[in-house]
Length: 559
Image (tube, rainbow, N blue to C red; front, side, top):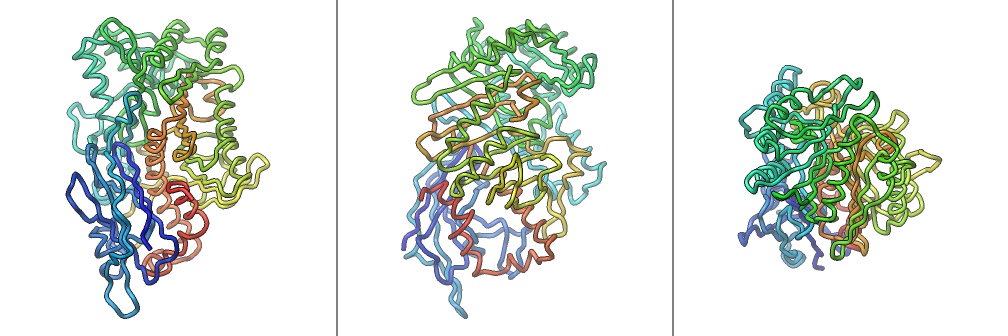
């Protein structure tokens, strides 16, 4: 009874999924083996079970502490690694020693490379902004006081980059810095429209570009048109001879773009960078964010044209800008299609386009959202799932509306007249008082001391393993305000399965991270002993043959 196994990767993580045709008798978990760059290794379980008690302070080999699940996100691998995996059931009959069952082992999966370079057209990158984590608790040595968190936040914007900033920024930080360094080296130009600009490393590189840096700079998270969150950066850019155009907007309206067009020495557009990442220390390091680089002169021209329209608009949003924003800009690149939208739009045309794609989802929808509010897009996801219980739907929302259930496992959501079953939403929250797990930064601590956004990515992935894989991302919060008030951008990329899978891996990683914390919190609220449940070596398996976990395996491996 051989297992089926597959691996999916982006630039930072490998996600492994495997399945058995039936329950495996006396299975206490799996030993997960990894071939990394040709070398055979055993994947470590992040929690040790050797003592009988779950212990996150001493990770150990999955041969000794088998993985009690049918999926695993491998965070130990790095960009550039080539990896393949084998899952081996560990069997322990009553009264006997545990041992791997080689006859029931899966074959090794196909080999994949961890890289942000999806193909000649697309690159995508992610950071590791999980401040609510065991890693951060250890870094802070258990001191979660306001003073300690403030010192940590201040350390992220030192003139000299440090180890923690490098780790949290991940490949997203590396690629963005390299783009700016490359423009300087090649005597190129960059044209950027930015919401926030306070990160010292990024600012230094813009200053170094001098008059080859062309920036439409908004007044950030302002209270009035005269309030300028970016005043210090604006002054430094001006002193360096950069071309700076002020986009000073009224209260309640945000110049929320964070895009950049990379041009050659003659100012001809070569590539466009967009995504959710603000050019700030928090954007790079303490929020979950993404960035996508599209190597296509046509798409880059769409963004360069928008840069020009924003430059000319000054502090206004004239009717002709809204009219132009309300038209999709489409580019066919090989087998992929890129639809580019900008806002403010006249009648939420870009949201209607997304809603139509959601309505036609066939296998599943996974997402990360920041403050979608009364979103027609979130409503469309809920409505689509309500029509098909077999559709796999789950996501992470950083802040939901008060009327939504702030629970780990939302099994019933009433919204827009739709009662939805098996729709799972997780809100970010830290662990508190669970066995040997260190106390983590809580949601209120984060909001008060670090920043407002925990998960800041705006990503929807539809049918990544289907016939029509779709990635939707950009600066757009999938909210009514983003459509009707703000400067935003949104790209819809259809037909690139590798890109969709890379984004899907990121969503899976973030979801699993917070789902564990949310489930633990919900169990505590119900009076259940989380540790006792985790200690049970035999009953864990049944959940993977029904319900949501089975749907997850179907989503990644096919039915």
